[in-house]
Amino acid sequence: MSEEAGGPVLGPTLAEWLKARAETERHLDTAAPPVDADWVQRLADLLTTERSWQDQYTDLIALGRSDGRFPSSNR
Figure (spheres, rainbow, N blue to C red):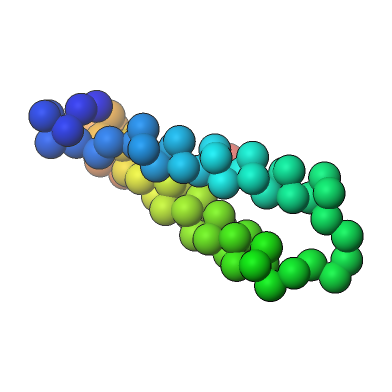
């Protein structure tokens, strides 16, 4: 959905989310305990970004449903 249509735009959020995940994966490949404070902050930022992205994504999907709500999980 485009900004012109007034809907949510997930491209920038998705790009940042994927970038943060890749950075976390690179860090985990080379990190040794104890985990440093800067990395813990980056992980907190990643999780916040992921929650935000999931909220935006579920809102976008809900736009296509007649009741405007995201369906509950079957799991």
